[in-house]
Length: 144
Image (cartoon, rainbow, N blue to C red):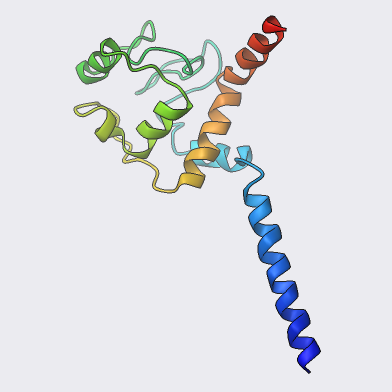
């Protein structure tokens, strides 16, 4: 009986380690897409897509906050851009965690995402769908 318990304990440890390894593989883009479903009422992602209540997000990575042509931003968002806020993986993560903390007085009604995993998954999805992955690849090719 002792051998059975030892074997089960070993199996449990192996499963825990393999589960942790899977979590370390990086963000899950499919989960990010599901999270973005909440954002679709206000944002589009495709190049040339329409603005809605919020701006189209294509090309958002590397863009100065509050500067997408043709969209009317809150004064608070424009001011943040004038202060030098540029959207990157880090700044978007901070913003999507607690929008009102990064841009007090901003108009986005979204309360934020609490889980780091959800933020990482959403950012991974946004990088692909907004053209950031293409631009990164292009920069790498140009540097070679």
